[in-house]
Length: 299
Image 1: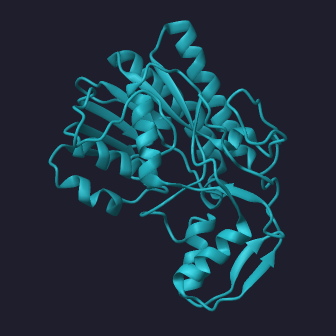
Image 2: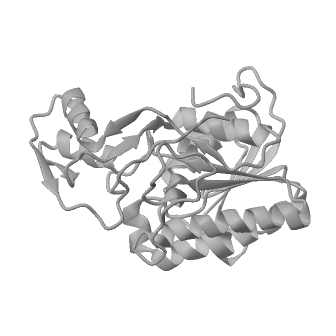
């Protein structure tokens, strides 16, 4: 359990309050699991995705419901959905280091123009808006664990800034609409998440380590491996997003697992669970790679 917000939102026991939901970035890792959740709960879902990092195959199980509409679109260019909409969940953005370093300008546009258009859609439809922000807004934190009141320690011009600052801007834009227009908004700051549908090549630790271990290749740990991460399973993270949607909170609210592991411990755990004999090797750390990452989930 991540935390307690308002109430559980299990599709087996809870009637969906929101019957038609737009999910930008719905073909991505997290977005596709949210599509599954809401379709399983009886809602209609409109997925907007440009498929720059998301994959159509992530939506195969959802398509069988008959209540999923998929539109290939870049929300940075506009966000138009006909008919009524009860909620807009804005997840569209490259999220892994591999992707946002490969697509720096698209990442900035997703956080700026994309967020503007998604907010505008919510405003026009009278819908609740949920922004999927990130623990990266804290940068390389000097406060540990990180509470929502911490303003962060971000390099504004480093290579990671295209993601960090785009999300910080999207939070500011969301709160500006909330305050000036009375828009019903919520912000969740998502910490490290893992689970099915992560791409093998997305550059994050879990899929990278598993792929290397299963292939019998060296498991590459950056730096000394003493840097920490807190890992949350995707289904638990989805529950947190759903609870935030159903709450009356504006946030930001941290979503994640408060139990830390070092990156070296994660590599060793993956090697043990896969039965691999792969050696663990150490490589240079990326620029601005955070030393620690752990959410304070106290409400």
